[in-house]
Image (tube, rainbow, N blue to C red; front, top):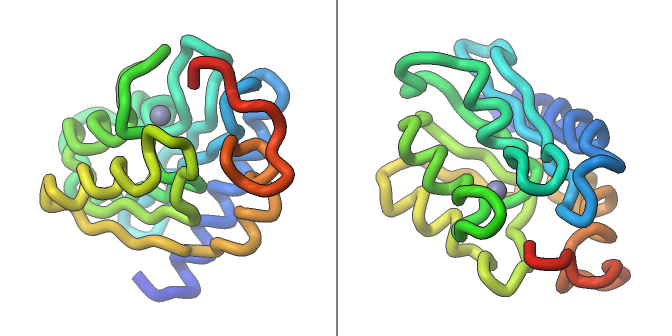
Length: 155
Ligand SMILES: [Zn+2]
């Protein structure tokens, strides 16, 4: 995958991110696209609280082996189980081939832990894809970043 292709797919994930608003609040509006052989085969975004985050929303649209699938996610997948199961665990369980993220989740319970889990499972992780563009959109919705709103309750 070239850097240009990676940025192009992350821009699609950013588009999915925008669709999450406003129903996803207080969770951050995250977007995810799944890519196989250069084409987007599924897209997801954060559903309302207690419903799937972006990654499982997209993963649920595909059956079978995902070893040849790359996931593009605007925010680091969550490492922890709270209202919904951990998205990092879900990506590992489905055995995707690679995970591309735009930015690390500054949430106290994540902060790199989600990516660590995915790497430890032997899955390729690429960070900082289209980081500035995604940060400009997502930053204000994240707890722990300058200009953020109140901490997302229980997120
Ligand atoms: Zn999640």
